[in-house]
Length: 297
Image 1 (cartoon, rainbow, N blue to C red):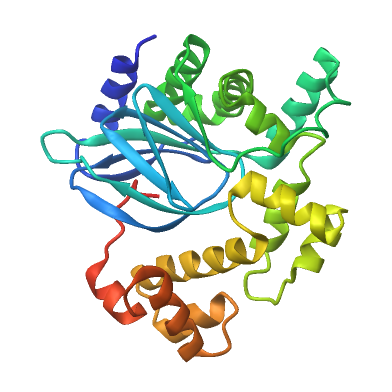
Image 2 (image 1 turned 90 degrees about the horizontal axis):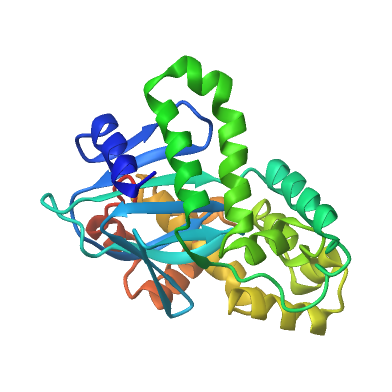
């Protein structure tokens, strides 16, 4: 099955710019028709497959570009800057967003590790990278095509969706991003689990000691492994997660004080100072200049 067939399905389901549900939980199609500079975003555990155009994500200064040759696998929640620099009405950005269900990905990962006898080895070595780019292969392309074919038939989506989504997950776990995904969802997933722990507590004070204890590591070992996985220190990561979430809330219409409070800032003035230091604009200036169209994140 070719990527052209996948594009035809997206064109049929989504002739205009926007984001549409497929009927399979966690699977969406998107079309972006204007260039957007990179802006703060938070990638949740997700696979993003592009069939036309290109997207980019910047993580701690490193630029990741993905297109119809490489899909993005983000196995952990990550604070990034994301953009659609080449999208236009004539050359739209078209793609699919697939949320990664932690329970199913973990089940599949453990099954794979058990079948291959590698379950005891997943805890060693470097932690999984926060973002991975993977070459489209035949298994991924076929699984993705079969999955989004369900978008035109609600009954098929309801009956077959779970199985075809599982098939897509399996293709990801067996593909170029498989090592990163298996390490994030398998036995040696302390860093990924700690990021989940932090993400659920953005409005609370979570210290490095709290995170290290959750991971079952000493502070020094945790700091080293965390930075290997995310390219940021735990404190830098936590601050970026809070400010990126707040930036998205502000872009969505929430006022600055509410956004600051929602991500754990008791002082609006401190929030504004740190926001401006990171993004170069005050929250108010940034909200007036920024729009986040469907498909950007």
